[in-house]
Amino acid sequence: MASLSAEIATTFLSFTSRPQNSFYKIRTTVLPVFFKPRARNLFCKTTPSLSSSSSFQSKIIAVNVLKPHRRFSVSATATTAAGDADVETMIPPDNRIPATIITGFLGSGKTTLLNHILTADHGKRIAVIENEYGEVDIDGSLVAAKTTGAEDIVMLNNGCLCCTVRGDLVRMISELVSKKKGRFDHIVIETTGLANPAPIIQTFYAEDSIFNEVKLDGVVTLVDAKHAGFHLDEVKPKGVVNEAVEQIAYADRIIVNKTDLVRETQLASLVERIRNINRMAHMKRTEFGKVDLDYVLGIGGFDLERIESSVNADVAKEDHAGHDHHLHDHDHHDEHDHKHEHHHDHHSHDHTHDPGVSSVSIVCEGSLDLEKANMWLGTLLLERSEDIYRMKGLLSVEGMNERFVFQGVHDIFQGSPDRLWGPDEPRVNKIVFIGKNLNGEELEKGFKACLL
Ligand SMILES: Nc1nc2c(ncn2[C@@H]2O[C@H](COP(=O)(O)OP(=O)(O)OP(=O)(O)O)[C@@H](O)[C@H]2O)c(=O)[nH]1
Image 1 (cartoon, rainbow, N blue to C red):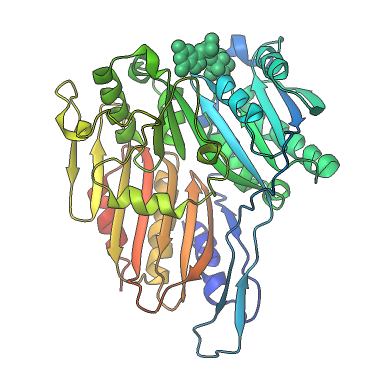
Image 2: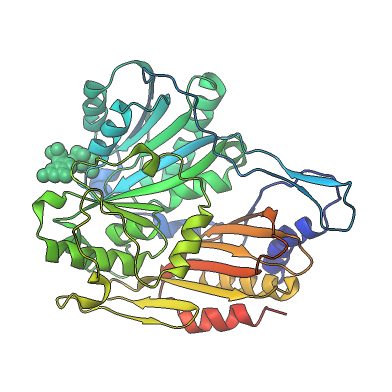
């Protein structure tokens, strides 16, 4: 445990003890204790009949109208508050290529959304990476049929998705970057319907070669409004993940698709259920994946705004994509819903009947004792990293003039300083956990014990 805590301490401490006038670096820490095959077993799916022949395919799609493409960056120039007004510290602009993961259960509308993205008028050149089971690349041809201007096609054949996905994805992204850099602005990865997105997400943080060039912009999860309830209900054997739940848990954006196929009460109940699993993600309802492109591309990784609203909102905020008349008070008044929520002043924990996956958010003012925070987080990840799917936070650390933002995906932890705290800005910590069997009260107690 000591080495684990030290690892995290290094991450935090390196920022507080950095030399002045130097660039801050974004750091990734892969906690060594868990970064072993044992941990990866978590992501292995037991679908041998399907797993032997999944494949990746990538295309670069040039979209006709060229507008200035968006930069996805966290950048700030600020004077240090260390008393020396002449010394400037800078967070370098993040010019890495953004990547979006589109996931969702079989038939939820991933390819439909992808086609919508590729045929929309946004001026971005998009490299598409598809991961598909089976010898026949069905999605690939569906996408190809609907798009024009494909510059390049690369095919890769993998073995088992879950065990080799990282290696293949790393190779594919590296190849795209080394050979085609400058010819595309964004990477979109469509996973298979049975994929657990965790290893794909982790690829972006755990592999230096990827992390230096490509930035995970967001995870978009499609949910089939008609069938999702059934998949969420599915009881899996012990140790086998329910992919439908996982896909929702890891999302930054959730698109409840196929709303034309269900009644409002069914939809409201599903939305409530999704919200209970993942309170952090933004949610929209659609037919045929029709969303504004800004909603899925250019989410901006950490998405601090989202953290702020998710922890502030006791009533789920949801965009209705043209369904403004739909539910308003569904969170609390759907009589068909058996879930219940407990909201405390600054901490919310949602109980759900889905296999123990829920969100916990903590908001509190004050500054953290770095050493205590390191110990707490180190111990927490040591003991619970398998159950903590995602973790995002915005912290006020004693002696640090910038907000410290971080996120974790199981055992992978990454953090960096953000902008300076404003002179009159309350130093409010915000932290969100999504995972299995989370004990909100315990987490809150542990966190608050680290405050000075
Ligand atoms: N009624 C209805 N059908 C839809 C909607 N969105 C997609 N579909 C249809 O649903 C089917 C599956 O959509 P896809 O986009 O292929 O779904 P997918 O998630 O890529 O499927 P897999 O690759 O099998 O995982 C297609 O026939 C789509 O035309 C919708 O909003 N309403």
